[in-house]
Image 1: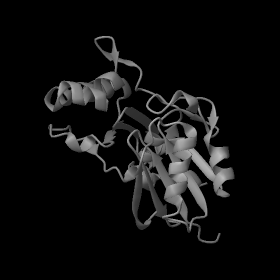
Image 2: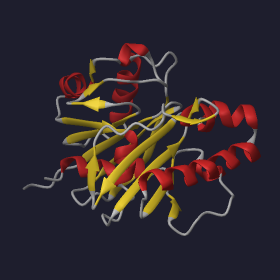
Image 3: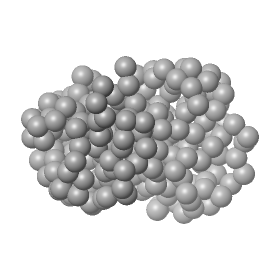
Image 4: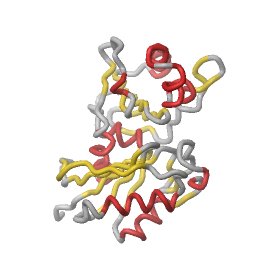
Length: 231
């Protein structure tokens, strides 16, 4: 197989990031970013991705991480973007526009691929605009896991308690207490070997974490894109 370069894209609630990877998944050049448009409708986001491709034009295929449930390249949910994404064929539309093969997966799933060891039960959660989650068993992804909108405490969901809006409203101290409660709750639920915490707000955590809980850098959400092309 000839060397192929993968453009990996991470669509977030506040920013759209992209990076070029070689066949082994190593970065070629740096990360580029544009702000997520408001409203974040499909056409506006696609224009943002197209803008990023001009900064990394030498690519053969594309991996996209999207903040919602993905089924066969179609976005089924997009709570933190816009309702127009529901039922949108992101994979097909972007492939046609760029003239390159495209594969799309949930953004937390891709971040997980960029972080996991491949041993045992590994859970990934992302603390950003919303709350993302991914579950792996011996390196194999359990598809379409969506913890964000499940009840966490006081009849409210994980996302309502731990997303960016909650952090801004309650302050860092109380938010961190909630994160600690969530870690304990998720450990009882999944009995994971390792929990990885990523997303833009993970860097705000200063609490003492259990030995099987690790903070992962945001770049994992781009590096994991190479996994979409591994057979």
